[in-house]
Length: 452
Image 1 (cartoon, helix red, strand yellow):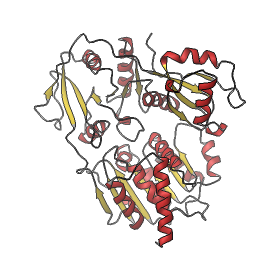
Image 2 (cartoon, one colour):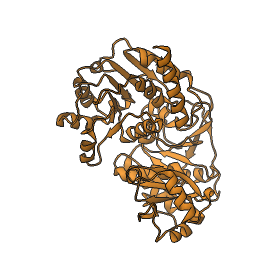
Image 3 (cartoon, rainbow, N blue to C red):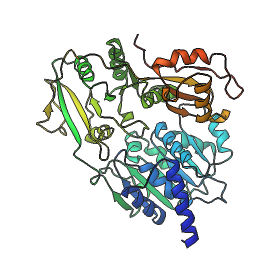
Image 4 (tube, rainbow, N blue to C red):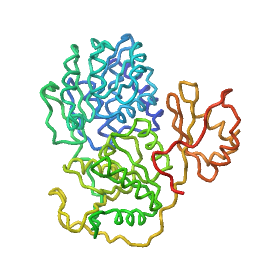
């Protein structure tokens, strides 16, 4: 690399980190950037929350060619949430290169329209990408870089055939990058990952700041023990993991009836409902989320102090991923295992765990500080965060401290507003226009049953 080229790259990276509000790269990201730029095959193993997305997006940017008008890099992921998260990071980077996302659960027509003007970077789930390849929606001849993010999860979900099909239709592939938060996974032959450079940060990033506590339930149905545990957490947010979709809904419903405002999240929900409940969880409108292992990794949700295992997973690796939602990097946190007193724990749970005696009679957690306001316009309507903030402050007569997290998507937006001022806000803006247009602005529809 020439001196001038190196200077431009460094200047661009400084701007990208500023756009992402990041001061500097961590050791893993620096090593990944060097390896992915120089090597043909790279296997990156690093824990959930360590910054793997940026670790591969930065070197990919250096590999893209402004003069090529076809897809140059394909990123395959196991879930639509991870796909959207990677897209969001890429857009925040401000690279100037187009990105598109393809995933099931919504109409394919929008994707076909987007692909008619091909992006440099295409992100997708295995099933939907296979569909597009069958339709010949995009030309694969210029794809030289393939990224399989959370490839172990894709294998676990049974996407072997789709991934084999996808890789088989990339005739000019030169670089393969595989990423995982698990080190004990076998890489299938069809990936053709020959003699990869392996960057293993699984061991190095482990810390002793995660406390694991056992809560013994006197009843086989552990809902009372869960209720008392949540009431003892000082109103701090928590993720509650279950093994089955229907159980997440049942537990959420029971907690709501007991006065704890709770949402649920699983793969059987409509995409809009999944996205909405995650928005509420991110912005503080919802503090308790009952979920399957779908939320164990690959989601843009805040780190928290408490992870609760209502059910334990069959595999230790999933137990580790669940716990990765707390005590990330150098932070601390607690994982709680709720176990019926006569139940036998899986072999990976060590004997001698600290038994937590949960107090009975603690008051209900505080209600969420915020509520989520839905706006029927987004980026494609030429709305941005500044427009929404200005409108809510001027026409809604809010103070800037009444606003929380604002998420502007393509055609809709979500705004966290302090609960105490929501009623006045909606009354003040009822007949007002934002940037000369009338938008529907109302409380976001809930996946949960709101507690009266």
